[in-house]
Length: 216
Image (cartoon, rainbow, N blue to C red; front, side, top):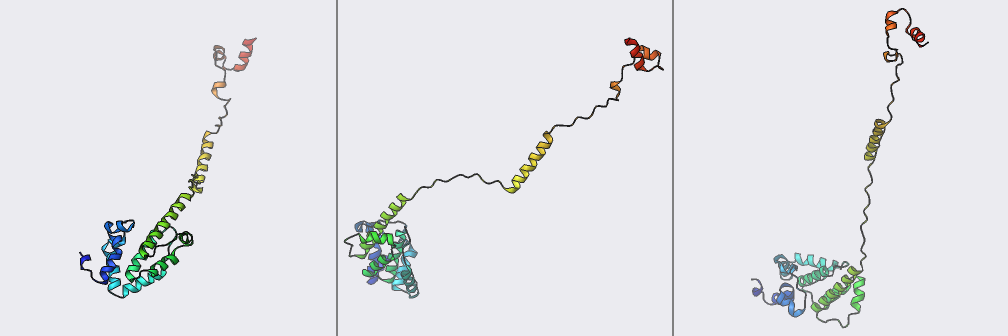
């Protein structure tokens, strides 16, 4: 373990982050314990340790992040976690951290924070109370957010589909239309009078004349 090997300022530095690393340390301080806190990972622990007691390049990077740090709406956990991480990396504490938190929060949270009196003197408790206040505002915003129902719109028919449909309808109309009947040929053999015995006996006499004589 690395923790028992820390001495002097490094040991005091760890005592500050101890509530964010172990559940046993968070319980006495009343801090919500987060299993996913970046300080519980080796890289998240190593970076602030090296920055505070090691190289200068990491410190320059942490200082730039500190100067640019502001809270986005409904992101109180991200803001507080990053604020504490950078404060540990840079070795900041006390009023310096509290002032950075106060000027970094948005207007809606700043108005609610101004009503919190008295405020804690210890900066870790100060940040914890700020986190709780931010959670309350997030809950109110989530409760008041209107619920919109999705409207199901019929998908517009594409022009290609419309043209294909029109062609199919045209073909259907043509196929289902009335069929023209062929004119009957009155000169066909079916319209001629049938041959009788008289017509066979007198082939030289027109058949119509023989029919007329018989009718009389």
